[in-house]
Image 1 (tube, rainbow, N blue to C red):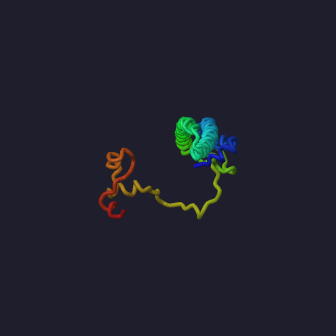
Image 2 (image 1 turned 90 degrees about the horizontal axis):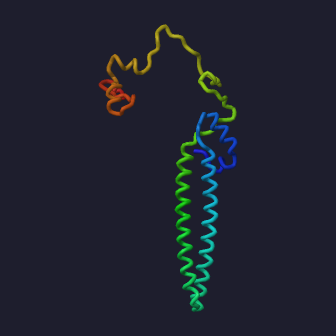
Length: 174
């Protein structure tokens, strides 16, 4: 998952990385939501500061026995309601941002060649020698088929996908 602060500070790099990954992700929507969230946080923090100052003032007025405290308490109730609404809005925006950030693909390294197909891939290094065999190599499905070690048909009935079900010796081997 990419850091939202990094995205905010490097939107051009993020756009470049997303285009390299052939992603249709809308980065502007994320940046707009982040901007709205940050603005709302500033507003709610300002309201909380006002509420705290008013609470201190109510406490001082009650200690001195002045009647003005009742009017301030009513104002505090409406201020608290506004704070509650802003907190809910910020929470909703946070939830949206979190869902969006989870689907952003990781950025490719700057040295990674960009290509539309596997033909553009570069071999960086190899290990060992490529061996030539006098027979055709078989994959695991071809090896398991004659002995009925796995059943792809049962797997697709159970899961609806191409997962195998191990049978007989294949189950014991597993």
